[in-house]
Length: 494
Picture 1 (tube, rainbow, N blue to C red):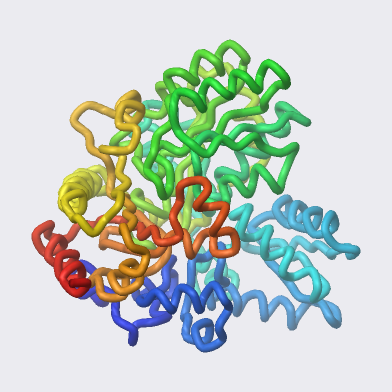
Picture 2 (picture 1 turned 180 degrees about the vertical axis):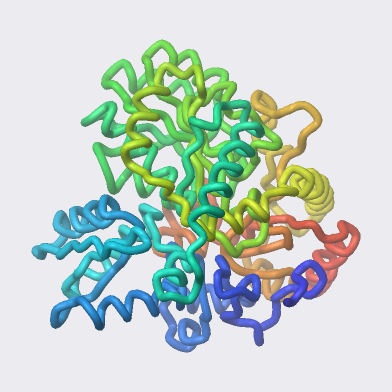
């Protein structure tokens, strides 16, 4: 297998290659700026070369093969099929489609590998795929592999792996293993918490503090009572939540520490007494900083994380977690809801692979912390750049409210050129692997705003997220070698 630490996937000829070279890859090579534009514009020449993609956005080939088989064997004429990992997820998808189309999807529990099918008329397929993306309630490639008969069942090993993962996450977080819940993706973990919030506090809007990853906000807009959005981090924004509470009750406050892609942290010390006074749960996502670097439970009632990212590091397994604070006043209603809603939500083989990958997670994060800070310091010296985003410089006083002793700032950073015209050629020429996702053991770059907000670029820029922003997830490379790769790309601009 190609060693992406020393031989990255970065050239035009690499377009569409899986990242990494695995049938279960969670990223895909988009080596040039024009490839990203073509992908967003649905250019057939680009799409036809994609061998995979991020699994919530792109149906893995193994998953597609399973869909096709079920469609051939069980669908009626003019029906398309979409599969889900549980009957409840299928029912939620069908409800989502019914609310947006004059159609009534058919649902069927398939009776094996926990799978359920939603049968759809053609015009409703795109809407159902929106649900697949937003909810994260996906069938993973390894689950599809088992359903196709291409992998032996490993239920006993899967149970043991899930137990080990819960124990590992509980120890890292200082919480109880009974309060750790596993999901097939990070977004499905966020979605489960949002459903719990809506169940516990029906009819109340949530609040999103700081500009988040795109689908975290989308979930709060698309499902439930709606959301109050405060796109900037800072004391004033935390205080504005208190102003809203003078007019109405809120179901929860969501925030990322640090945020993706602007790496800002909310003023949780100001927010906490407001939440306590008004009996509102705080939901924090620690994917970007990692629980190695911050202790979100100093303030959070619930912590979500995408285990696909730094916890795994390999970008070949999807997973997410929800962890409840053991002494939160909201622990029991959240735990009761989650116990009823999920049944070992992480597939056996995904759990086994994730358990193996995460054994050296803490050690890897220490190296990534060091490399991330070295690259940040280097980029901060470049006169071509207008701004470099990193928790060390973005609201650092708020980040340090939750930072663990002797920890770092993580491996994600973003930057913007003074002149937009420099962003495309720099991206094209930088000698690192290029594609969506983050948290990989190898450095991974993408023009984030184009990928996440292509249809709403003006809005994203109004929130401080420039259309020329390049996001870099720093890996385990030799730092001197990594700096030289960036320097070589800068030299081509002169």
